Amino acid sequence: MRQTTVIESDSFCMNTEITYKAFGEKAALAVSEAKAVLLRFENILSRFIPNSEVSMINQHAGKGYVNISSETFEVLLCASLLSEISQGIFDITVGPLIDLWYYKHFFQVPEDERIRHVLSLVNFHDLMLNSDEKSVSLRRSEQSIDLGGIGKGYVSDCLIKTLQKYGIVSAFINIGGNVSTLGNKPDGSSWSVGIRHPRHDGCLIGAVKVTGKAVVTSGDYERYFIDRAGKRRHHILDPTTGYPAESGLISVTVVADSAMIADALSTAIFVAGMDKGLGYLAQFPGVDVVLVDNHQQVFITQGLKEIYQAVEGINVIMI
Image (tube, rainbow, N blue to C red):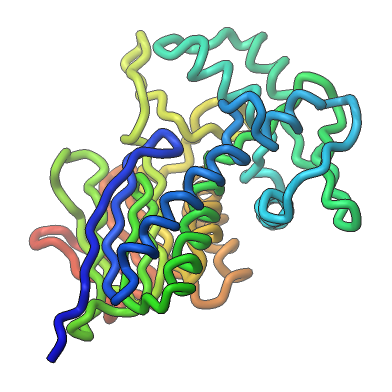
């Protein structure tokens, strides 16, 4: 029997580490093109690259429409849908708020007055999409979009499609914790994706066994600082308050067919909390979640019953 070619590789892009594992005769070519696709998407979706399409949208805020690629339009359309479903809990117009908290005052809580001013700029209804022209506009100057809660997921989906073009039927891609799988492992077993413990470095709360699914986690432990009052100030902001979300959840993992949906939903549910978040799931059949609350209690939805493996000593509640 001819041995299956396996390619394991890594790269750094979109400000994060990416790992690839692909099996197939054209695995090397497939991964090489996937890296090129990833770089292209960074150059159109990153708001930190001056000539990207997202930067052009932000630079023209309040000045009119900008023509964009069909790919960028697709991301913005999905983001708008999630914003409608969540009634603004998920909102990509949070760019000014993110800038205020993290890129200018990293270890300092901004003044209330500044938060209120910036919060007035956050409104997904001000993102206007023209599907005929594939163009987009932000209604007011100073507004800006940030795709941190959805972009990596969209790119993950595109990378899986790139691998499939080369006949790859078994692969694993991890973009900074956004995991996408293609098929099963070559031996026919499922991929096992570990879920990090939100309070113990190097430990897991469990793992999910998946086939051709995406597994995306949002947590309060990735980027945060402790303020002068001893309060944890993490990077996932609530667009309704202007402050880091305090929903009672500290980690949300979404398992879905689409990494883009999983990415956006993990953010929305984290901000919304368990009750509202589970309500969002009703709009997405076949999507499941692992939730960890601020008491470090773990909850999983019914669809994960047969594929979730808890770490010994960690109790799990089915919801």
